[in-house]
Length: 503
Image 1 (cartoon, rainbow, N blue to C red):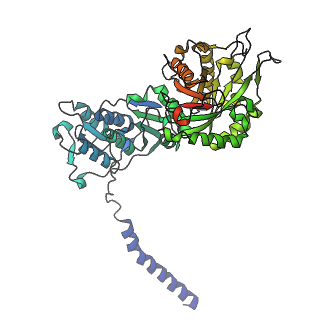
Image 2: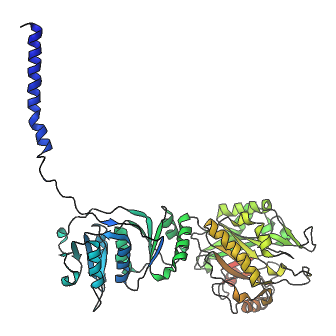
């Protein structure tokens, strides 16, 4: 045998020996191919609601939890059950729901029918019920019952897929904790709201806007009809807020405004200085009101966009319409500083809607509202300062329809629609106005000037028979009032004004 042949034989022997050496360890790692693998825990199954908006009746906590379970849960191997009348037991079940995860069901108190709960256990395919408090096991049907006092006895459950696209709104009542826990265990985003309108609370708005929303479930009929609920949720989902937070103007804030036309001091104090200086002046004025208000007091501008004229002008309407470029510096400075803006119209012989359309670009901004001044709304043969103008409610509603349409289209926060008035005749059929629109906050500003007695007489007259939902504002004049009311005196007016404007 040659040396090369001998080396080849040795190498082959070593290779075979190595293969034999690793045969047993590889077999150990693989285990017995026929052995049974450990069983996986059963999985809970949830799904988004079939509808974009759903309202769950919540006459009592048992109804609320059952409703949430029916909407979000499809399969639940384990369910937590407590008596509806035992708040301590219900709260304990709610605390445990997210850890399992599992829905909570509350048995009706007293002689209430437990059949709905039993039926729901069957629908969910429940194998084990964990009870909290005193529960009649016989009322639960053919399931394994485990007492919460034996926590190790509850089987493990694989969590369901999360539902971040589903927002569940509830009130703040602690009794709704099981319903909230059931929604959270299902993987939905749960938000407590102290008001039926989710736009009204900044924290709720930001919570909703954190991720895209495809479905909303509201627990409690106070959240309103489905169309309104979905609209409000869509607005909240934008995350765009008003100065001071939230997306509803009142009652979350009071506003104190400088009134006038940019660059024209004779028309009001807003025109006595530039945009940045006007911001500072409005901020200082608002701060003087804060000690006398339970709500935040924020600065505002009331900018005269169209100015009543003693001459007909080229268009014959006795009104001078400012260019948007003239107003833009004040509007932009206000946006940067958190100042609310209202554009005021003095239309002369034309109508309010025709002039409002000129400023649509600005009115599409979230911090800009609209004011209508009927004093300067002339009839065909009238001229300013000889007659006091007037407008009927139907024309105001035309403007409101158009303005609300912008809010709807852009999904904007609520806009103010301010109406100037110091005589009842200035707005005919005022009682027919629809001041309950979701998109708008209607406010009548008392424009009377003079001695305190005269102003209060005007105020008392304007307060009579207002349409539902109407807010009231007050105007102070530096020159015409004798004397000008102080902030304390102004906020002592009853009812306290939501809006105060200074000319």
